[in-house]
Amino acid sequence: MASLNNQLVSNTYKDLLTVSGTTSNEGLENTAKRVFDGEGTGSPLYLGTSTLDVVGTSTFTGSVTISGKTTTNTLKLNNLSSLPSSPETGEVVLVNGEIYINI
Image (cartoon, rainbow, N blue to C red):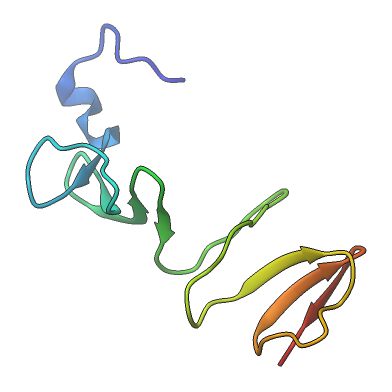
């Protein structure tokens, strides 16, 4: 982890990240807030106390685990031991290492 010890604000502020909400100095809350750098440039990340939203194209390297329910019009990924008898449209399941998509 980078340290701010013995660093001048003028030499490091651009590398600091902050979130912006309707009220200053609230930090993270339940509702996701956009992450900005020290110059005020917005990132594609939105963070909340239990939320991470990424707007735009995303690339993941390594393992990714998705669990829980998703919202309407999104991809669902379920880890099952057998194919469901009546899957929902757009449902994606992982069965014994194989991915199945109901279109």
